[in-house]
Image (tube, rainbow, N blue to C red; front, side, top):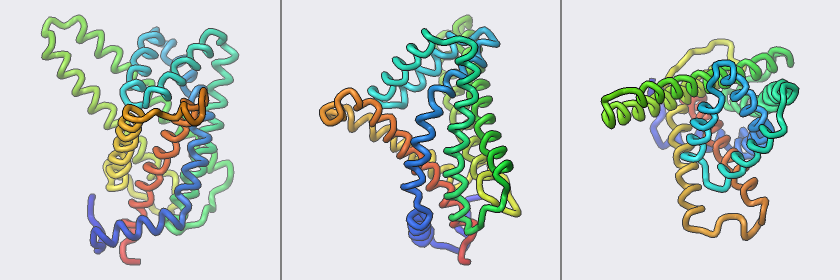
Length: 276
């Protein structure tokens, strides 16, 4: 699973860095960040609308935003929270339906950047029709949406069970650990599906856990931890961008996250190709 395929660790790192530059990962990550930003609020509308079917919209939203507050820098979280509240106050069935469409459209365009990057990394040309490419992009977006809804539902039901349990702190600590495992498993599944379907490969091999996925998760953890530390000990971006500081922070989070995910895919491609 974690074979270097006849490469030394240093060679794998050097080749991955070279492919990152050739594949314009930094430029495509900027493209991905832009479309993720466009898709964020429509995506949240879609998730909350789905949770309302199960009667858990309010609890699910509170849990989801608690997760955001744990990982995102303060300014980015406040921007998301305040904007979403404004959207809900002026929302309606039409806005919910429009949100689903916009989320799928924006996220699918962002997935195009992922496809292009991994095609370059695997040294293959894109021969799929536009319809098939769009179907893959929408499929991955839909899978991610369903996964988020399922995880939030499980978390809400689990919280209710723990709250009614008489075991107290032991049950609560155990449930926190289970939640962490579920989030990690969900992230690994999304990365595995992306790395499996995005590149235009003739033969594919599903890997639940790959070196690229592990590297991407480590980089993502570093991005969010680094941002929180930086903003805690610095003046932040408000001194430079004023009221736009929170937007800049959120876009930078998306940009660096995109670099992490794309770099993980490039690493997988380098290791699979080996000494070609």
